[in-house]
Image (tube, rainbow, N blue to C red; front, side):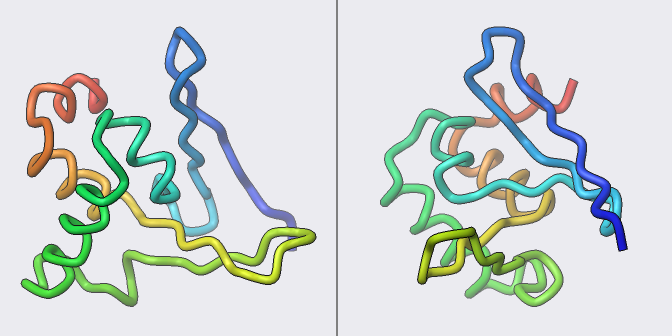
Length: 100
């Protein structure tokens, strides 16, 4: 099985998002989301926890744990619904800009 992965990056090269064609969505790590919305990691984590607690999005279908080579700890990737929900809570104007 071949992974179909497309990488999107801002014109200045600062933001990189991965589109996994196998699941037909964008995914981003917590670090990526911090960079996209320019907020502290604790703020992003708090919003993600609240989004999941409120069942605004389904946790199982919107999070993927992936093992990275030479790392004991898997990285959690959040899918588009969580990225957008965090964006609307942290920086509505930038969320709309990222969507264009």
